[in-house]
Image (tube, rainbow, N blue to C red):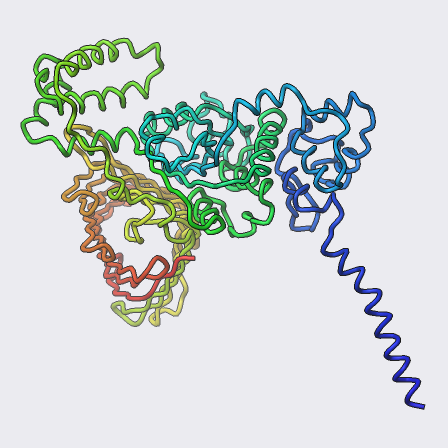
Length: 604
């Protein structure tokens, strides 16, 4: 009686395998509407509830009223197009969808390619792409974290002759930008940027315009990472760019629909298997995009475009004392005759004029152009320049070297009446004592920085949360006088509960050793619900070695609302980088009472 049971079990197993095999095959061969190529092309992503949603909002980008949330409806509408006139219209509107539908169905689109699109495509024939990282710009809240662009290289960017010819300036770049209102003040600008109050759009423009904006007007270095595409990928890329610049738009959010996320989605449309959005947790920031693409791309060519300020300062350092004095005399009196026989000084003056012109509209440059003509005429009578171009090795802000976005620190130590445990969780991004590689010198921007402390004296858990903490330290120089500032806002724990606070500082910083040592003095005000304080923020930052850094701060403060005595807070911190992800931290401080802490920090 057992044998039939074994036979029945065997037959059941065979039948089960027979039924499962087609299901498995189907699981690996999704329907066209669920194929990654179609989903990425229309910028779909799954929501927390499991439904689909495209990051593009413009109705013209879709064929159906609910197309933003329904990839199947979009696919059906696409495939049900029968009229030759409609097919010609779609071929001109969405050439990338023509390519993808042909690949997914094996059927040739029944009408010829769009002539208008074909002419446009010929003008943009390119060799490869480059993902561009523009370093931070403190003059715009949307740019304090950097910026991303995609560049279309007409020729091989690794060819020295091509780079030296200046022809890369004639390449094209594409970006996703916000159309903001110039009349909005800083508060409304930030709020609109966070809440999607500005429309975002794709723009294709000559690369020299982007260089003029970012490298000259805003003095930001540009780092380029080449992405090599095959012929089919290049064709799909151009077809998709055509669709985006003509029909796509979306509300711009600083946090999740920004210059980085939308360019990631373009790359995913060309290479769906990269899954770039899935590889970045939390906020998508420009330097993280560069690192993620570099990991997928593998070994690739990197290019560096120095800012006009970097060019000027490199040339300024090559002048001797007498030449620098002549430059300053020209700046104060604009007398070209006094420096007419100094080629190095004249070259530095041209750098300065270029910086000044880039910040003005062309109608406002007449006075500078007169000076420029005088300098060029004097320079033409002298030998060729011996000034050296900017040394790329001095630029520490290569985003591929940067540490992780988030940070976790655990420290333990002593205070006056017992032991102390401190935990720090920082969502982003970088402070003065973090590993400096990958960032500009003295770069400091933190957001959602939570510090928890518990002592054996009280057993109570107190906290401080800095929602945002920015500090811009610009060394003061005679050649380019500039101020330094800091601003922070957040919550801190008190005996009466959580209290919000805002602190602002403005003052001066002096550099004692280039990119290594700096002191600063910043008069400070701090406002809470119950008090108004004034004080000073006096600091000394010094990098002893490439991996060992220290910061000493003294903060005298006095409450004007309470007419209290002057309190002298101070802190002395040191950090040693073990590698790009780990560092040892030590802190000795007195803020109400003294404390000494040591521990470990990790970036992730």
